[in-house]
Image (cartoon, rainbow, N blue to C red; front, side, top):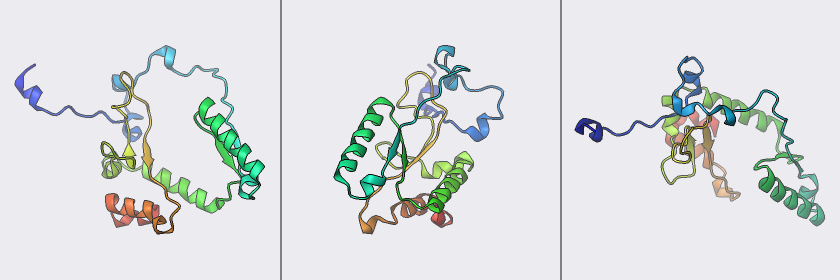
Length: 171
């Protein structure tokens, strides 16, 4: 390998849907083998529903059942849908709106909140460190949560520190 190539840092490949969806040539790292692609008639996954109504009412039997169902869903599926959780519908709608707004930003804007190695919060796209052959077509924006009262502005403070005061409303 020529010396100038050794000295240049390896450019990290990122998934940017806003760019890739208009390209005719997708980088080969994002093209999965046919046997790993979803088939046309793929069966619909049954999403486990976890009803927290009984749990939130303080019923110990309902709490045990909800815990069992969460554990089972995590082991068998890796995901689940929570219903009767008590979160205000307008808060959920705002969260979805701000999530869509964030992911529609240009890549250089989203990367202002880039998750650093060893951190658990922030923006990530290609997950090159986790996959050895083909890269997933996804982006994430992760935050920590704490039920402590002093932590109620945790997400807002993170976004302001990374993205600036214009993103205060996202938090």
